[in-house]
Amino acid sequence: MVAHGDAMEATDHTEMSSMSTMAMAFFTSTATPLYSEAWTPSSAGAYAGTCIFLIILAIVLRALFTAKSYLDAKALESSLKRRYVVVADQHTVSDKAADTNSLTGILTSNGQEENVRIVQAPSKHIQPWRFSVDLPRAAIMTVIAGVGYLLMLAVMTYNVGYFLSVLGGTFAGELAFGRFNQGMMTM
Image 1: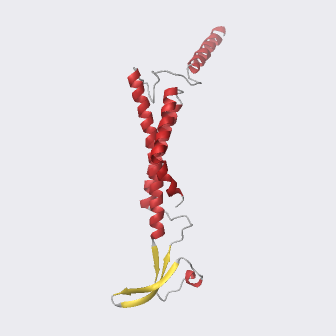
Image 2: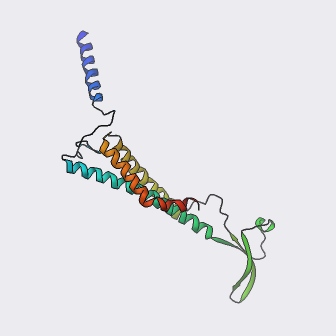
């Protein structure tokens, strides 16, 4: 019985010592693995290259957010420009109500004139699901999540250089692409 207890104690000690090697505070090292043991910088130059990679990855993340905002703004703009033509002599519920988003006009087709009402889509509602809009939106959001998680894993190494590289890349990306997001959010 005593030998079994000693073996359990040794196993517990081994598990505790392996847990204590995990960094719980920021540190500086040029040999910190990134994403796998195979990606462990072996020189100062390799470490600098890894940091540059993280800077570029953070810039790409900001660019992806800008691209998503741009695609969303274009989809909304396209939707708001879409007009619906109401066929003459067919009355709908919207005809009975005073509609400020509609125009009346004359539609000429093959020499025949008809009185019609052109109604613009309302701007304050959720747009219907469209394959051409929602599939690219989902795809770009998936890529954004993947890049974001990769950057998070780099920060979770607690390596100061990796952490500062992610922050520097975020700053540079926002500096380069932030102005393109301002007008798109209010559309």
